[in-house]
Image (cartoon, rainbow, N blue to C red; front, side):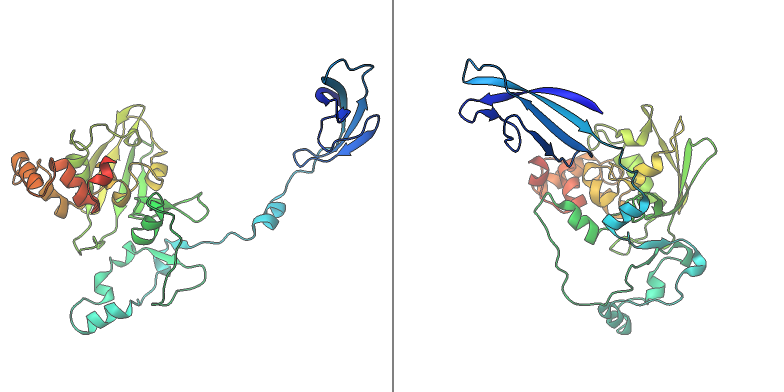
Length: 338
């Protein structure tokens, strides 16, 4: 038990303390509060005289309380219900052995205009298999989705691009899961990480997605001072930038001078290394479509700075950087200048 003395403004016309509930003088009142457990008792003492319109009463608040019981997992569960979400399956033995496809694609396959689903998919151990919460949906219908305006960009990323982070989180937001990379591995001291890519993965135009797209980003885009004047701190530890190297077509290694175990969280989060769809416009994202974007970058010998800038001016842009940003995202350059 403890006492707390506070001074409250006095209103002469009301002739009582100006406190919540407007209690009468010379009485005891009990107030409840959602912020603290326990009972609050107010003892109001009338001063001997009041010489002005604004005076004070001395209010003694005595709090009697007992500790609240510690919350339990069951009590929390009763409030939020059962947490559900899609599960990424990583055990290859549990992967499906047959595949379906949209009716429009099936018609193209039947007409000889497209390869079968099995031929279009990555090799089996590179598939991303997700167990849905309520089963597999049906093709067709109308998908209605709330959209608050241009600033609500994540709505578009979620439904149209993945998001295409190198790694991602499970539905609880607490465990790392494969995404663009199917697996990863740190060395013993955490200074090197190897990313294993999905063999057979493709860009939307059908071009292969390989380690060359990562190296194109690192060697050509990220090192270009006009496109990326400031290196991102997410690709560095203790102020020292990482170094990316190609192991083979489906594996890359990133080395740091100091241990950087947090780097996997960076690859899964909404950072400047969070995928081409989200960060490509800034020359970031960790990878980029080399087969398409190399034609707009002056570093390539067959393009050259003069050719790249002339192409940009012919299309109505000031320089190759402005043109590159438009070709990366498809947005008008005014979006980047506003």
